[in-house]
Image 1: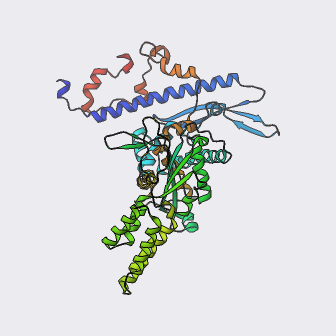
Image 2: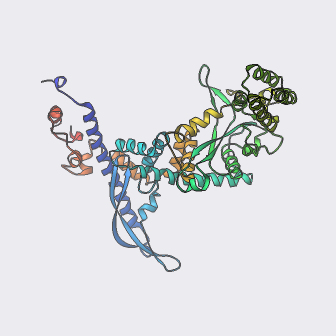
Length: 478
């Protein structure tokens, strides 16, 4: 009977082959680690490090759990205190998160940025064939988030001393800031209340066209945190100075909803604040129900005569009757008047002020600001708000840092710098060149069959044709 006539479950076959390939990969990684450990044992300073036997360890990787042995050494420090060390762990810079490899940690983080920790753990477990609990996923995010926090605080300290390391030069910098209220849990709920505002800031140097009617922000920077205004502004400046050469920035355009913490970024005359168009228009729609009065306010607003606008709104509040509905309308108009008075300098958008902006670089365009509502949702809201999600302050901060890196396309680069372990180059060469089909017998020994050691083809009738083709031999011998 031909193969085409058999009932073949391709998904089952694919899964079994993946398992066997992963098992072989784990064996290769184990061999490389133990060979490196043996070399370290031979080359160590025997007067300092006394060999005290071997201990087993396990690293969770994308291929599965790799169990290997490495030597433990006894030593004495300068004070004469006795200690123990694993030279292999020190040599490779064993990182990741706990006993997880960097690549596995990165996969967990990427999944956690898209869905809940429980769902992320399930997805990674299915991908790797091992058990990753939602608690383990949470711990990975917390540990890496704390490492990123240390980087951000270091960048903020450098920025405060005008020692930022950013390389991108731009004469104009666009900044947009807003907050999102998230529900809290546990001790954070007792300290801050049922919910707390997470602040979000983005910065960019322009836009580029990526579609017929679609533009993308260029060199985007983002940071988010629950902390109070003063610390957050320093963190935001650190993020900017870590990407941009702050000394070259001549003009900053700031877009926000008028909150007091946002206005703390207005430090001198080079910063031009505008009230976010979305919040401005929302305030008019919320507090002015009469369509004719609403249109009148828009007409005066667009004339750019802000003093006349404030007088007009006050006159409208005085013109209503003394009925119950009139009293409510007066209160609404006075609320709008107060809001606009507090943000008087930002009511005219920057693009209508006639500012003398330098020409944008080739391929970029200066467009109107007002992307913050979209960024609040895509960066934070889509993952952290709703679905009955509650956060601790520290846990929310750690995840928010990763979400900001993801939104600015820096997540992979940052995680690679935080979780990469190193082996000497020769071990990589052995790993990739020592197991070709022509050398496999000499490399791993006669009669070695990796598939028998890892897993055999299922004995079900559906795979009988495959068993007959391979004769249960190693694929390398075919």
